[in-house]
Length: 247
Ligand code: NAP
Image 1 (cartoon, helix red, strand yellow):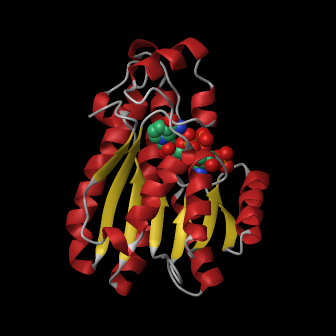
Image 2 (cartoon, rainbow, N blue to C red; image 1 turned 135 degrees about the vertical axis):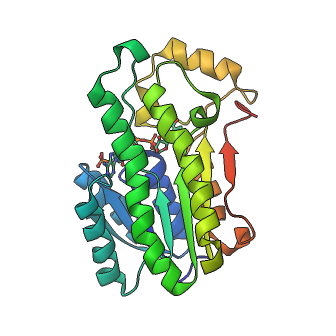
């Protein structure tokens, strides 16, 4: 399905990004497994992919650093002999707080990683994709970018912003054969949601029509679809993977 394609998955050392990297590699893509701190975990993801017969390498870069992001794209080109055909902007962090208690640092760092990181990587990817006249960019937003969420003023701003960026990039790059879409996951079991108190999680699950939290492969399969030629007539769209939590 993705034979000969080159993919970069940001924040792929664990959680949703790890599942996406494994899914894309399973479909034949050569995958750059990006991480910013969790090197050992990223190497484990590479081993898993290689054991399954796939091709991958781990690449350290904080997506919110222009220099590190540029070095990552250069490393991918050197390693695989060509620029990326697929970019999955998945890296993300949360620093939740109520508005009146939110510290400048909590606002700045969440916007920096979740929003500026998408800008920097998209800018780098678009250059190569425009030259190839083909590319797939998939941005991982969130249900809360649509619904809002008390205590996540910063995170919701970033995740809603990603939707505007997805549509703008889709408009700008369509003429060059580059499709840009988003996936908005609901409650997915990962390290990010493991910190939620059990009663909060249970209250959320009660509100989900399907009555359970999703798992990482639910999101990874949606990304695989958007990365493949099967979705070539889609651009500027968002796939909601949330058990009906938000419609
Ligand atoms: P996670 O388990 O906390 O993993 C986050 C990943 O992002 C890690 O691989 C981490 O690697 C990486 N990362 C963090 N800062 C980075 C940076 N500056 N540069 C590069 N990589 C960085 O999170 P997750 O739950 O899988 O979430 C993945 C994406 O899905 C995020 O964008 C999140 O907002 C979104 N999402 C998650 C849920 C959910 O319920 N879990 C729901 C909706 C949307 P290091 O440890 O190496 O920094």
